[in-house]
Each structure stands twice: as structure tokens, then as C-alpha cells.
Amino acid sequence: MADVFQLMADPTRRRLVELTAGQERSDSELVEATGLSQPAVSKQLRRLREGGLVSVRKSGRYRMYRARTEELREMRDWLLRYGPLWTERLDALEEHLD
Image 1 (cartoon, one colour):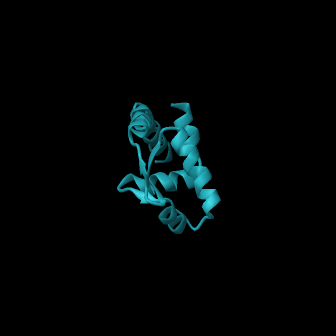
Image 2 (image 1 turned 45 degrees about the vertical axis):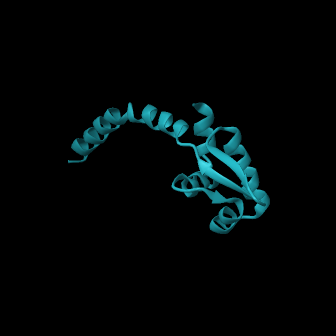
Image 3 (image 1 turned 90 degrees about the vertical axis):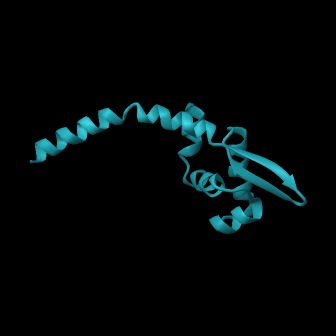
């Protein structure tokens, strides 16, 4: 799971996961949507693919990418365990400020 946090720490990779979460997108669509160069997008997609966060398939001359949300669900579940702690601390801060 540490690798998932490391991968998702980068804003460009988070954006690529967002763009591919709802639908499959081609590499050229992702370049256009991010405004980054083709090599920059390809580098980040490769890291996401190696980390298991996106899948890729060839379609003609394009590579089609789709987010794989299983790993993200694991990260979300881990974070949700700490929700009550955050709520307690925010409540304590609110009481202190009042």
C-alpha cells in the first residue's frame, strides 16, 4: 500500500487516475487533457501501470488507459479507519476555540 501512497502523492498522476476512472481514454486524450508533453504523460502512465493503478490495452495505433480502483479502495479503507480520530481532534479544536 505504501507504493500506492507514493504514486498518488504526485498531482499529475492523481489527475491521470481521475481522468481514467470513469472511462477509458487514449494516451493522446490524456496529453490534451493535462496539457503536458507526450513523453511526460507516458512516463507517468508507465509508473501508474507498473504500480497497478491503471490498465492499458492497444486499440489500433492508440493505447487506451483505465484506472484500476481496487488498490485505491484499499487505500481509502485504510484512511477511513482514522476518520473518528480526525473528528475527535477537530471537535477538541472547536471546543478550545469557543
